[in-house]
Image 1 (cartoon, rainbow, N blue to C red):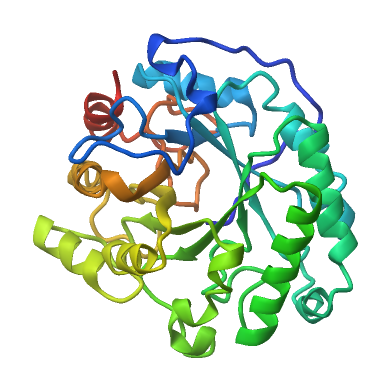
Image 2: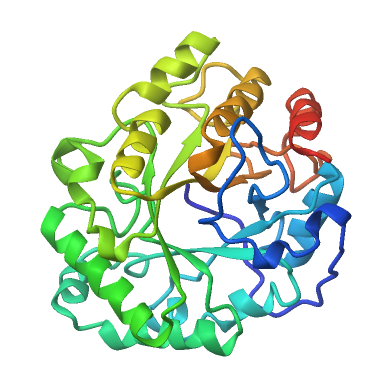
Length: 340
């Protein structure tokens, strides 16, 4: 999901809280064994993006509200230029200084407006940039960061969309291998956008762009209640089982021996592709799906979004000039399922 929200680049002071459930979460691995039929349980890595700011204070505010510490926090690098998204992304890690959980960073493969740079990336012209990013994570004491390289590539809305399958895979591989050359502990998450892949992207099937088991640690999906929405449990199950759905991709991940992630998910009443509104049952269905697949789950992040014209998935921030909607019924259900 693209973000329009203004990112504060300046490093802000962050407040770090410690709930009993959060103790030691930073040491929990996304590859850890999970109990069957339980989520989040004691080891399930459950988290959120920073809203309104991509920093620890915003993540901690959400997790305090839900009454369970977050084992993961989701953020994004800047993508104005090659330098800003690699060597110049120190602010990303500074903003989460002191956060005790794992960091998930969505990292673009090319800057905004630079779709043509995929070929240069694929040729190795930007290998040093990727090595710089790996070195940065080590310097910032986040070598085990989960990196979602070129997420949601299987649509045409991201600058790094996979117009040419081989070019895209070569770029991804160069990025992963470059980062790993300077940061061997980096964890790579290959993430698709749920529900559909156009015929001119990856030949119409996202898994045609799978870059190889050696450069993928986690297989993931971003799944919102849109394109299509689910009006019943039966429809939810059908959408999940269909090509490009959660269950369909989970099966692919298991076949490759990979853990599974849902790096972004949420209700989507603000989306043009939503037909169910706030749809609190979607929260229940997602939770139950996580519980049923807990043994193969790496982590999940709710995407909390207040901005008009986006998915408007916000659960906890009150309506204000910069927050257009609060989904209170869905919020109550989320807190009861994902809280302490």
